Length: 233
Ligand code: SF4
Image: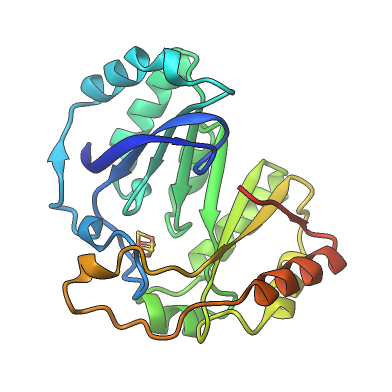
């Protein structure tokens, strides 16, 4: 498994205190990405499945407040075979697992069966607009969302709110989501930030992406009107 970063955080990528692995490589190219250094599949270093599993088991005392291990990226599902091996071993070891994914993988339903907590980005309801900012449309993301709603599984949807990209259309998002069974789905809004800007080394194309607290409040109130659950982490 190729990894370009790892470390602990509390309650940001799943419940409790978590060991978070950033897997190398991404199939999207979001112009606001805060981890451009991990977009290439050659970034970072290779670890064997055994090395990862042993490390997670050795960190077990750190997984307080119902914590565990999270796999993110880049895009973790690009390394589906290794991910499945690690998740299977962690399941046998009784360690809580989460993944944070851009939602584009056809193998996500298979992977999700091994995961306790599933976090999926949903950046835009309009495929063409999403493609213009990330290089990838949303067809597979919608199929995965609809599949998870259909089976009623826990799902945490993250929407990065970005001025000039998606922040002017809360109703369009809410209308789409409310067509499905979202009983076990929570929605989180993440305000655009520029933490990764300097890592782009002068190639950062995003301009004026910041949103106001009013925009976030508007999304929350529209989602509430449509009966959608929102969450803050
Ligand atoms: S999907 Fe995530 S990791 Fe991939 S380019 Fe977009 S923001 Fe970066």
